[in-house]
Length: 136
Image (cartoon, helix red, strand yellow):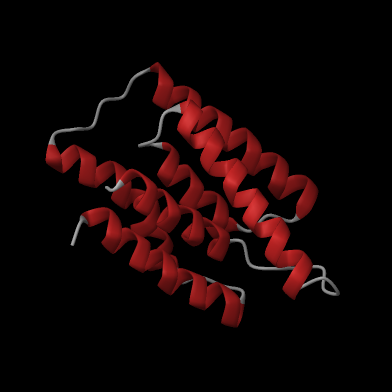
């Protein structure tokens, strides 16, 4: 089993917490935030270039706007920022677009009458989809 598949499993656990309690444990958030960069650093594949820096800045801006304007949760932003450390800007933009699309669909179908819905499941579904598409 690949490390990314293990990461997707942890995202599914975080999704279950987010759906059930609207909270994700701090230790799980820390692992999901730090694991991508630490795994790549441990494997010797971590390269911090301008594409990754742009990805981090872009993700931070999207998360900040979502937090201020739309009530984006803390776990969601931290997990997305952790993922932005390993994806270049173009892939991260696509990742965020797919996340928001999935969230919009299941928010409309399952949470249409409520004001809040968990976002971590959208991140998990997107990460699993990217895992199958890229074959990581």
